[in-house]
Length: 119
Image (cartoon, rainbow, N blue to C red):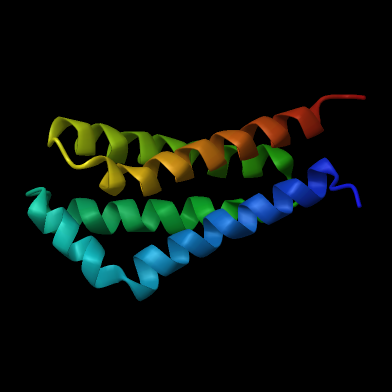
């Protein structure tokens, strides 16, 4: 069985969306603790959450330019999270979720761009 690029894009989008829902929904108390641990304000936490949910929803749009925008938006947020972890000298295992989501979103952005190009 061969996995086509549209199917791979859909699977990756589902995984990214699911992880955001899990972390920012089900495990929201951990997010609150992490922002508190890093001395980041509540308004920033709430703004990041709004952006993450908005960008994650964009991953399921029929317009591939919107999918790419959503993936790049999450990638920027994950890059900021990674930089914050590095600046505050977090352990590597704490950086892995943001790094993996960054990579997944860059792949989604790449695939959506490739699918936009004329054959």
